[in-house]
Length: 273
Ligand SMILES: Nc1ncnc2c1ncn2[C@@H]1O[C@H](COP(=O)(O)OP(=O)(O)OP(=O)(O)O)[C@@H](O)[C@H]1O
Ligand SMILES: [Mg+2]
Image 1 (tube, rainbow, N blue to C red):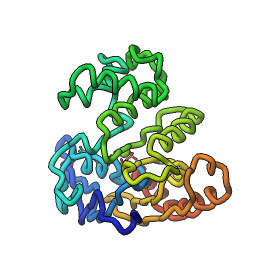
Image 2: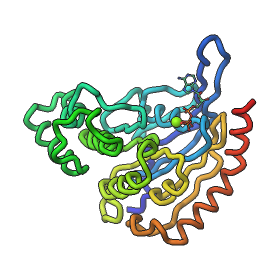
Image 3: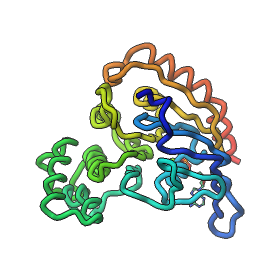
């Protein structure tokens, strides 16, 4: 089935979000009238200057926040709160420090009442899948940054979510680890594999090159209040991992950079005021 023809798995319809600023400040308009359809099985990246509302957008889809105006639908129904079908991996959504790798991975199934044996077996498989075999009994502080992100990824996978909501999941790891984890992420998502039931990914990143390499479409948000500035199709073949250094990728990155350059410059200027 052509993804472009199918019904959206997520629909944002004129979504706005305004916050009350802390300590008696005024209102902060984080997002203004965002309308966006996310197609089932697509890999969608979101980029935009700091403070443009990327994390707010993901938190709305996760169900941690509700919109101030507009509507967000998941498979046609309004989102009313978090649910296992929408898994999250946030940069600052830390692992539970008092739980081991296995304890973290099995947390979702545990919370859903899956029996001990079944969730242990599954968590063990996932630990192996993300390259943490042999580290199952370690605590988060005993792991490298890359290993922690692998663990967070396995924890997300444990709920078999239809949607992966990822907020700068690889921002805190070094460049080599990031490249390895990008490839792993693509593999786990099913990059280049003909499959009708691939998960849908919404991936926030500051890395334009990362957005281009991974995504089917890149959404560029304008600076605060966040609005959609551009939606760009990335017509590169899959699998993507072998394309890392082809000139076409650099060309698309350049093109995207010219779209966001002015926004980024103005966002920095405004921050300084
Ligand atoms: N809970 C909150 N209360 C008040 N203001 C908030 C809250 N959460 C976010 N904001 C404000 O909303 C705006 C958007 O924030 P958000 O974190 O979504 O931006 P972002 O695009 O993710 O930024 P970054 O790239 O730095 O992660 C910012 O001005 C931020 O200060
Ligand atoms: Mg953010």
